[in-house]
Length: 452
Ligand code: PMP
Image 1: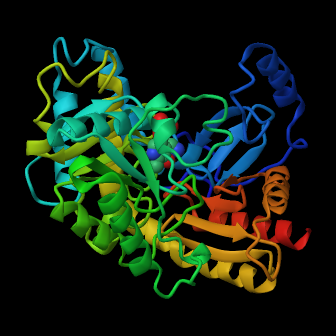
Image 2: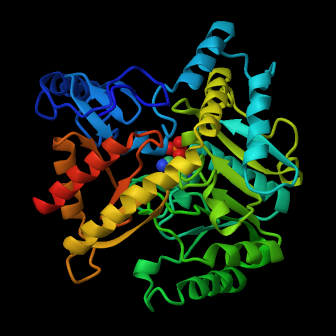
């Protein structure tokens, strides 16, 4: 066990799992009672455990338990919690000013983040960005910009896609429960098409990319009309839908189709971006250069910040004042983002994500060989998943998935689930997690599977 959080810095939290009470402990239970009394019931929590400190690969709760973090606050703290450079820069900024509103008197940090986004995102064309507060807001803005630029209205999204919880992004999101149920009516002109999901492709994975791309092209051509289609919005690895990696060749075909017909290709890299999949952005894996890219989550090490970045001529189509918001690109969040990006560069976090895959994927595959409840292991970098099914079938098994996750939680491993069918265990460790903690977390997972 290493005694320090590792090279990410962060609070000097011993990097070891420690259980001193049952999970949840008494202080968490007491806080949970207060939460239930005052926080809206719609705000759920994966673990009934309240956080006190977090850093590296550890989250410590209010009872003094130290849990291994395989969630990163849903793919946010790739650089670790309270990582040094982000804390330093954000603290300095807090002391200078907290807010002026970028639309009133702008500040350098906003510009610097946009410069970094132009440098880091795929493609060497001229790029511009707008900064906002959340992933959903970024996706909303990408759709606004694509519609304005093209003068078209239709937006094409995918089965199993997730884009947020605002009205427009609920419409873009595939899964009803819990995201959309009872919240309609939804925004119009949204068209959902199949995605190349190899594990569940009816004719098998062999021709999945070609067949899915042909179906999408057909639907857009025949039913929506290319001349009506403003944007195709896709996650290069579908996150909440179950870490679905589209069959190789699907994304390039989609990109070529969009280009041919003047449709704006929007890559939603809110979950996949900022080193998570072993590249700075997941699009790089197949050399996709999207017209617009949405980012959030990992961008600022935990402070709320999101962006739309894209071709300058598309981004600049919108009239002055057409984009923005009071808090968009808050100066403290921008400072944190610059610190997080500095950490990603200094520690070569894309390489760290690849190393996590190198360690974790063979372990997960070995578990799949021993436990037929695992139907498929998939993902890239530090965005890995196991899809659970009834053994010998492809029938989703959400109950076992929930049971495995709960067993992990009891043993002090923060693990998340996902998937349209709720049957995917997903692993999103901080990219700075120590290899010993990573291995220990995988041991806990394996014990949970063995104990079923
Ligand atoms: N798009 C994707 C791909 C996401 O994973 C998420 C969040 N899970 C969102 C959009 C929405 O982001 P936010 O929760 O910050 O609004």
